[in-house]
Image (cartoon, rainbow, N blue to C red; front, side, top):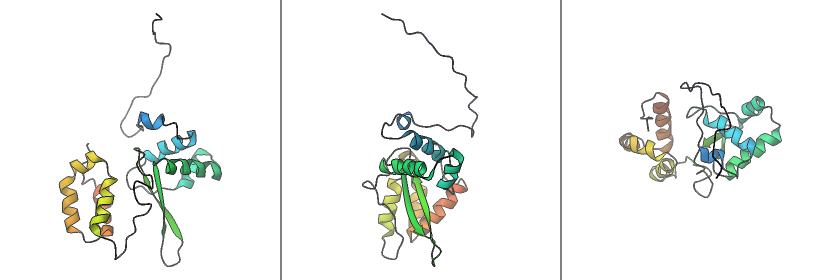
Length: 177
């Protein structure tokens, strides 16, 4: 029987908070993802929640062609790691893309809506259910009382998201779990 002995020396930087990305091993070993898709999701997951995101920024940073960027984005979308929604800016001002990124791969369009429209006909309750389904379970448990109070306090999903985003940015939510 062959003895398993170490055959490598690995030098690593000290893991100082805020200077490292931690990525799930299952994501890195997901055979469905192309190498460019893995590189892109590492960069995307390194962004703070509710970041202003530009895929052309990453394209330039990584020295990619339009085709390589598009293929990486499509690979992440097809496998549930990225949701991209085209939203009008209003009054003929064009559109912008809004992104949801998940390390869980749970964003496939058959799992959730491709878009969450905000209109007078939408039910605040049904939109809240969709919103909470996409949050991390530990986050929901840690912030259950906050989410319930915010839901009762707001009358539209748009108002809820605006306050939620502000509270998240101002660190009024429990992010320890």
